[in-house]
Image (cartoon, rainbow, N blue to C red; front, side, top):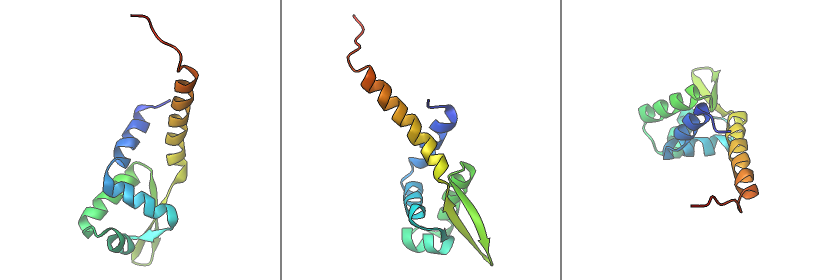
Length: 101
């Protein structure tokens, strides 16, 4: 079931830059410097997007000296995916249902 928390998460992931960050972090844990290089975003802009992702629970941080590494939290994404899978299953099961006008 899609809850308000999950719809908020969908809004967070709907931003193209945040989606790109998530896709990059799905492959490997990266520091801000790597993400700036890979996305072409300005440091300030990227930091703002990372804060939104962190606040939504999509990423977590790991300090490493003077750098901060970011890691994707797959469980959060799986919960949203499961909600969409349930919605799709319900739609398939009820595809022939039609309310009379």
